[in-house]
Amino acid sequence: MLNFDYYNPTHIVFGKDRLSELDQLVAKDAKVLITYGGGSVKRFGTLDKVKAALGDREVLEFGGIEPNPQFTTLMKAVEIVKSENIDFILAVGGGSVIDGTKFITQAASWDGDAEELLNFGFGGTPATNLTPFGTVLTLPATGSEMNMGAVVSHKGGKFVVMNMGAFPKFSVLDPELTFTLPETQVANGIVDTFIHTVEQYITFPVDARFQDRVAEGILQTLVEVGEQTLKNPEDYDARANLVWCATNALNGLIGAGVPQDWTTHMIGHEITAMFGIDHGKTLAIVQPAVWKIRKTQKHAKLLQYAERVWNLTEGDEDARIDAAIKKTVNFFESLGIKTKLSDYGIGADKIDLLIEGLELRGMTALSEDGTVTLDVSREILTEAL
Ligand code: NZQ
Ligand code: ZN
Image 1 (tube, helix red, strand yellow):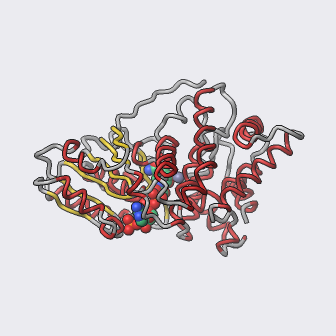
Image 2 (image 1 turned 90 degrees about the vertical axis):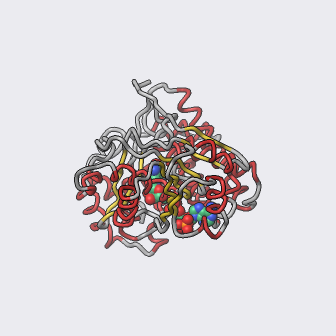
Image 3 (image 1 turned 30 degrees about the vertical axis):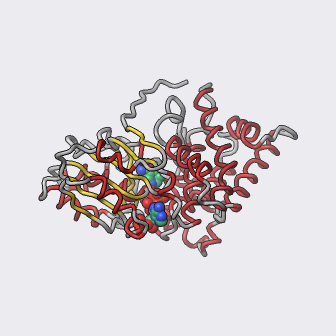
């Protein structure tokens, strides 16, 4: 096992009917800014419940954070945080609203040009004294409710923005708040959770048995509940399992002490930035291609994945790995998620543009061992056609 630090201060408030507890979670004298997205929280009544729980506190609202939150939109909220002396922000929504809020709190405390905050990547931004924030999660997918990462879109690119002070103080995870999601967003969330897990699991072995078995548990649970929660969105237990898997797939637990490979995410971000395809859908296109091109480097873990997640124990090793990749593709397709660029009308003529985007953002040495160069990314994208 590799050395690691594990730090996660987010208080999780999980289960039915927990929104009223916001009254205890937010300081009585706080001046609160509620951030939300395009209006689903208004349509389905969540915003009203949140406001009722906040009672007499002074509350302002900032709506309109779009999927793949845009820097320019978020900067409007930064102005409000500064001019109104906001001392608590409450994000009510999915990954985009939560990520947007993480950026807002960093930009509001940053004296320089906020665009600079987009350039620190996985190293983390130097912003300090962030306005505290909490979240009410409405979409299980990103894990943003229990981590310190955000992804912000700007000028045709997606930028990773991290900060050790950007963990939510608390996150309310009421699975019932996710019942109103359209099927395709639930499927996106299942795939996003699946890929977060495999990007911290299918690398090379370091004898991290606990992390491996938790990862395998998340993957098996997703396979078990995926179709069930899509077909019966109001099956509470199935949805509760999805929500908790999504949170744990990216809260630092399974990634501690193991190599990580974020190739699929980084290539996926370029596809979203260029073609507007949902985050989860891009991952289902890229991941199988990554495994096919990087089969040698990932051989041992792909084999372990085949055996322990898909019970493939017969036949030679390469055949088992191929079968596991096929089963993964079939799983995504069974959720209604397509797995090829051509399914979205994207042909070989667009690969140069995607490679240019990766180069522009310095994504030239991806993967667990830094050997996914632009040439290898080109092979991956070609395989994904
Ligand atoms: O905007 P509203 O009207 O609220 O509608 C949203 C949005 O259109 C809707 N929705 C959310 N909850 C709903 C609902 N509709 C009905 N009922 C509900 N309960 O769903 C749509 C998508 O929402 P969004 O927040 O964009 O989805 P998701 O949670 O998948 O977030 C995607 C963003 O997260 C980033 C992605 O890059 C992308 O920008 N990621 C963040 C990560 C992190 N912070 O750790 C890691 C991820 O890998 C990912 O990159
Ligand atoms: Zn993701």
